[in-house]
Length: 285
Image 1 (cartoon, one colour):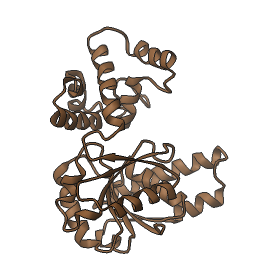
Image 2 (cartoon, rainbow, N blue to C red; image 1 turned 90 degrees about the horizontal axis):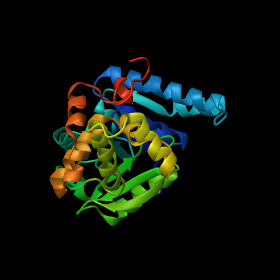
Image 3 (tube, rainbow, N blue to C red; image 1 turned 120 degrees about the vertical axis):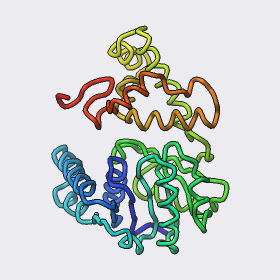
Image 4 (spheres, one colour; image 1 turned 30 degrees about the horizontal axis):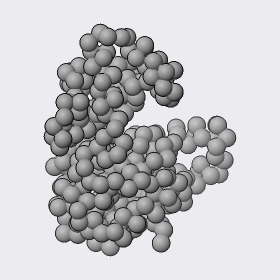
């Protein structure tokens, strides 16, 4: 059974991308934020993304207009009650997400699943805040969501097998390739990726090589589409620090520790592409 109506909580870069991907597959989407400005930014982000697709010949103008029409925006959380399923994509704050799952569990008793797009918080911790932990699952999308095909489907201790099946079917419905993983910090991709990225940050921090040479080395030497420091900027340094902290807390291995340089950059607000400055500068910043 397909998902006809999806609720997305969080109108940031990831939430907007999830909404766009679902709408592109014919799903009606309601995006919730408690304040209007993030919704306006999400609406503008969608318009830009869709316009680029039309310009590149990937979508007709009629298809683009239909996609945009499938997405509605609201500051009233009760507007989500008719959704068949929900994906949460708010900031990586365990208490914020936990409170949301308490509220959403009560608000959407009939939803097939409540999913979190978290990249670092245990799904079991979110499920424990609900009265129906069996329908809580992780759906970890990758950025930019409309382009990246992978979705990690994360089953917690109490997640019902049918919930996992429904979540995987939804991922396939919107054109993604699901892979299944246990509920542990980092899941599959970040567990492998983060030590590599942090090694590149330490190399740059220690003056071993320039940022350009580190990135060029991995692009030309290993065939990567972008270098590790560019990728850090693309992901967001604050997101990476949160993942590092989660991995270090769970496994205690030094390769997962965020280097001092990364911490200082986050403190200074140099978060990567989204802030205009990270290891590189963007948009004249």
